[in-house]
Image 1: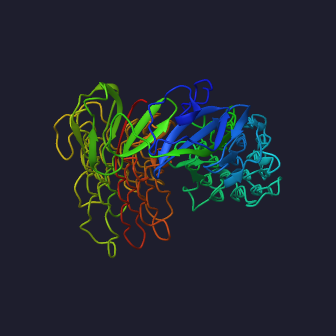
Image 2 (image 1 turned 30 degrees about the horizontal axis):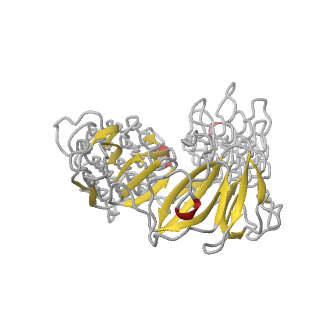
Image 3 (image 1 turned 90 degrees about the horizontal axis):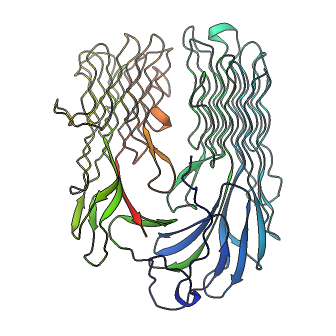
Length: 605
């Protein structure tokens, strides 16, 4: 969940406004002008030389405009996301994401009180009926509004053929027997352009039993939910939730919102991940709720007595410019301001400089190395980069050299199906000039035999074809211990390679019809919003199999044999996650690249 738990704080004055100091300084020395307002959780950040103020609402409230001054624009940018739909019950479908509206340069015509109503996510079903429909989120910025994000549609449930319901994004359809249709996205009820809120849910798969009872994923704000896939015998799987949409209004950094919930599968078959943007994963009992503050749909449940996942609550973000050219206690990286924090984000090498006049003696720091690349030909996923975190690391007046590790290269596709096969390349280390110990790159995933074993690293690469599992908590490519950084990769099956290890859990083992899943990452709120880092890449498999899912939907997915999913996919950029291993059909698939790491440093403004 988001780390927005502080109570509303008053308007903080600059220049001619008076009031409390924030530690920010503005060039020019003149009186700032534009909007003055309160409401929600208030935070300031710099982006492109401009200073923005964001009001973040995750519960009901009001945007109170007390003054409109000349000079800066009297407009705001607005994000409105409805509550996510609930997942279905009993081999059931994922809920649709709440409708998402992202509008820029919205005029604020007058002072006044503009109510905000946050839509709750709907409960998942527990009684063989479709999941509930999420509640609408509204921002009554009249006369322009109200701006409405419709609640997401519920995922279909057993008995067979039950449809998902309509919503901001539609819920997925239930599999088993006659397939249920995915719910459609509703037209935006406010008539404000753009009117698109999201996408439909995926349909359930036809057929019965283990090879037919696979349900669709809920729709997301950025894409349709995947249909349930019966597959050839032994390889069916639920449909993945539709992807959400990125937005930077809250903190100046892009985050995903409004992902659909994952579709459930028949026991013995593979449940699906929720879409990026808070969509809940499908599963028997864990990790199936949509994330509050994103409007993500709830995941579908697999079997009774477990209920479907609850949809995530919606959100409203209102931001506007309050000045330009901020200074901070220290320099280096991309500087943002969120609530009481100053945040320095490094996605490439740089220098973090603490002046002697700053008085800064400790910082919060997250340091993630680059993830390992996936291997080649029915191959293993790459391990996640090592993670080092300290909530109160000592600093002094000096310049600290920041190194951000690049992701390891995945292998290219192999011509034909004859070896030798390549292993993925290990990720590179990240360091912070001694603020915390070095983080070591994730191990590359093993290629099929003959190929090197999974490599050791911050987290280890997975195994392919019995070649050996890469160890975690190691200096990259060695057996030298590096405690507290990650986990080992997963073991292989003759037809399914292991997933790469993650910072949170080891990689999953390959199976007879699927590659192993990537190990789960770890979540931190150092940037102002809880975000997953350092998950493993999924293992590849053969034709008619299911590629392993990337950990937390940020590790790369394993390849699946012939067709568009032959090659593994890369890890999500600047998360330090591993790339997915390549698949194997009539051709040999290549592995996905590991993701570059990141270094984030924060302290009280």
